[in-house]
Length: 320
Image (tube, rainbow, N blue to C red; front, top):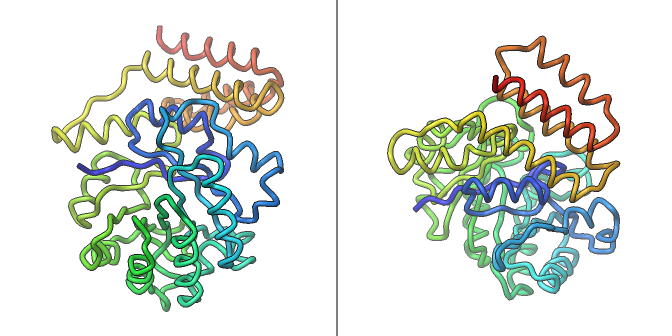
């Protein structure tokens, strides 16, 4: 059976979002990316990313790390194990400048020997599974994912996830899946496809084409975490039902409540704004003028209680 995974997105797939995604059927959720420099884990941002206020039911705490050297990655692996991680995912796909500028994330794809050394060191230090998430390559002239995939398997990596773009593509253009399909054919470890998974139909198309063991879904979940349920229904039956308006609205309000719990009054109100915007863009796309006016009102509110009540009243009015 294919696994449908919530792909880590820094600043987005926090503990509340992971909880909502699991509730709708995500098979696996993974922490937001952490720097492998563990001396920075006491910062407020890293501490938030390591927290999970909502139970994993005991076994599914996967932490994603990014680092540029064997020693730093090894230290992070040991720390992840000490705080109860059930698996670790190494990020060699993040295209962000601040990550690539320190030769981490997808910048590592330019140095295959360093990739091999880091992965081998991580697997050697780990007593739990070590996974890898990466891209097709650095640019169109250096699409070396098939070499990286072989290195990963030989190093003892337990699963490989490939985003169908190069680093230099960032998130522009369309994801490409040909090399992902080839990687799946050459490996015996599980392979996951990532990139542009925005509908259940697209997920099935990619799975049929690549033969991968599952998919990672990132931006396709924004404003519609119920997509996990719809994907599973589509894969099982060939069709899927929409979620009722009442179901969507109750999910939004539950999500807001969890955000306030996790971040507190001040930050919670602010963090919630982007999620509300994504929900509005998915739910109310046919009323752009109303949408922008409502979002402007919501964004002016400084109190989580007032924000919640306004969102609730707007949703209830749209049910009439």
